[in-house]
Image 1 (tube, rainbow, N blue to C red):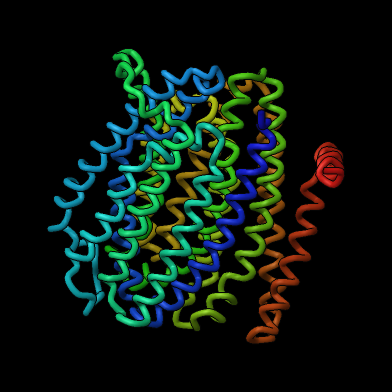
Image 2: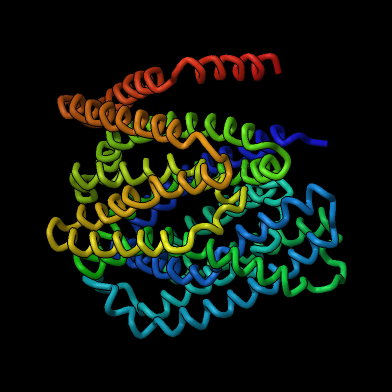
Length: 503
C-alpha cells in the first residue's frame, strides 16, 4: 500500500511538471494571441472570465465538502458510502451546470455596462455565450475529478491536464495564425474541455468501477449535513471569488477595459504561480485529510508548522523575484506599451504573497472540516474589499482597486482563519504561528524593497540587463531564505535532504 508521503510526492511531482509545461504553453499562446488579435480581445476575455468566476459561486463549495466527506469512508474501504457520495455529487453538479447556463444567459443584456472602449471586437453577446459554454461544460465532469483527488490520485488529473493543454495549444496556435478568429479560438477551448472531461470520467470509472453500481440514494440527514457544511464553505468561496473577480470588473467599468487587457499579462503570471502552489496544496490535500482523521493534534500541528515554513520561504522568494523582474520581463516580452507603474506592481505582488502564504492554513481548514465555523467573516471581507476598492479607484485609480484586496485580507483573513484553525484543530500554538508569520512577512517586504532599489540603479537594457536582474534577485532571495530559516527548520531540512539523498 502506498504511504501518504509517497502519494504526496508523486502528486506534487506530477503537478509541478504539468505546470511547467503549462507556463511555457500560456506564454506562447498569449504572445501569438496579442500579435494576432490585440489587447482589446484580451480585455474582453478577461472581463468575461471574471463574470463567469462570479457565476461559479453557484457551486456552493460542494466540491471541497464532498471530498472531505469521502476521506473517512475511503480510509475504511466503505465503497457503498463512496458511491453514494459520488452519485450525489454527479447529480447536484449537473443541476448546477444547467443553473449557471440559465443565469449566465440572463446577464447578457447587461454586458454593455461592463465592457468599455473596445471597438471592433464583433458580437459581444455571442463571444460571451462561447465563454459561458466552456465554463458550463466543466461541471458535468467535476465529480470524477474529485473522486480521483479523494483517493490521492491527483497525478491522474495532472496528466489529463497536461495532455489537454498540449492539444489545446497546438489547435489554438493553428487557429490564431491561420484564421485570426476569436470565435474559432473559443470553439477549440470548448471542444478540448469536453473531450478532456470525458477521458477523465472514463478513467475514474475504470479505476473504481463500483461507482457505477446501483446503491441507495444518500439519506436526508447526510444531505442536510453536506449542504450545511457547503453553506459555510460557500461563504468562504463567495469572499474569494468576489474579491478576485471584482478587481477586473471595477477596472473595466470605472477606468478602462483596455487596462484590464494590459493587467491580464501580470495577472496571468501571478495566477500561474498561485495555481502552481494550489496544485501542490491539492496534491497534499488528501494526505492531509488522511492525517487529520488518523493522527493527534500534536502531529497535525507539527506538520502544519513545517508547511508554514516552506511556504514562507517559497512566497518570500517569489515576492522578491516578481517585484524585481515583472516590468523588465513585460518590457522585454511585449514592449513599454504594456507596462504598469511600479506602485501598482508592488501591490499586485504583495497581494500574490498574501494569498500564497495563506495556502497551508486553507489546506488544513478544508482537510480538517473546520470550514463550518466560517459564517460571517467572508461577508465582512467582501464589504471591506468592495468599499475600499471603489473609493480607492476614485482617489488613486488602478492601484486603489488592488489596495481593496490588500486591506480586506489584512483586516480579516490574515488573523481570523488561523485563529479558527488553531482553536478547533490544534487547540494551542496560535501565538507561535503569528510570531513566525510576521517575522517572515516583514523580512520579505524589506528584502523585496531593497532588491527593487538596487535594480533601479541597473542601467543595462535588453537581455543583458534582464540577466543581471535575475542574478540580483537570486542573491537577495538566498539571503532572505537563510535569515528566514531558524535552527529547528535548518536541522529538519538537513534530515529531509539526507533522507531524499539516500533514496
